[in-house]
Amino acid sequence: MFLISAITVRKGRAAQKPLRPAGRRAIVKICILASSSAGNALFVGTDRTRLLVDAGLSRREIAKRLNAIGEDIDSLDGVLVTHEHSDHTSGLIALSRRSNGPLPIYVTRGTRECIDWGECVPLLQVFQAGCGFPLGDFDVSSFTIPHDAEDPVGFTITAQGIKVAVATDLGYITDSLRFHLRACNVVLLEANHDLEMLRVGPYPWSVKQRVMSRRGHLSNEVAAAFIKDDLDTTVTTLVLGHISEHNNHPALVRTLAEKALDGRALFTQLVVANPGMQSEVIYY
Ligand SMILES: [Zn+2]
Ligand SMILES: [Zn+2]
Image 1 (spheres, protein in one colour):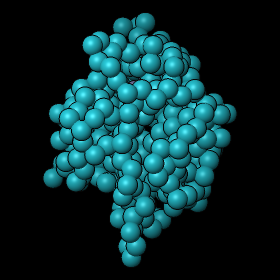
Image 2 (tube, rainbow, N blue to C red):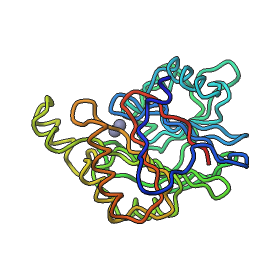
Image 3 (cartoon, rainbow, N blue to C red):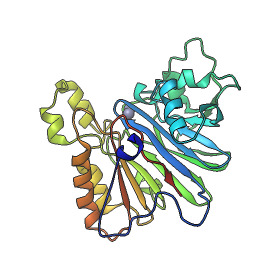
């Protein structure tokens, strides 16, 4: 089953938290439907509210991956969009059209202006980067991220004290990001490239410079330094994602992250998202 093989779970000295809580109903269900340079979509849901963060896969692929975890694409209550790049928005317009009414799309003003909506008249909920809003069972907070997009944001999504953060497409780790990643239970953090693989890899020099810049993507090395120095003790599931298919490898990410975690007295389960494949479901 690809659902099982799609993730790499850290096996370490610490007891691993079960993916499904024993003895009580789960409050929040999370699945990384895709997290890589080729496409990004994250499912976060409660019994009553079901959200996607980004829609960087085709509608058909999103429907298929939701089905695989027992969710229906027509039951989504909204899509939160981090920024306009196609690996986060390629399925957005197709997703917004559905027979049971338009799907609300939450975007910043700048991101809205940069998406070609074509003939589509989407149901947009525009918010200001840095602001928060309630969305069904969830409280959503947004924060600006340093990336070469018009008005990009990361999110924290909280229900009944369970806090999930999405922080990918980052040139570097800002103080604001450190603040927002505090007190989280689940963090999806970018580990985009290995610096040496990027340097000798196939991209043109101009693209390499863009990826490495302060408005580019986070390297394994910087992600590992964050884990070592700043990862909050509350984080019991750390997902490393947005892994480049050309300039990185999941095994390399795992090795570096395990090394960084080994220096910390944390009970953190490490999940490394394989490019293009969905993760196992994580329950809280
Ligand atoms: Zn991007
Ligand atoms: Zn991206």
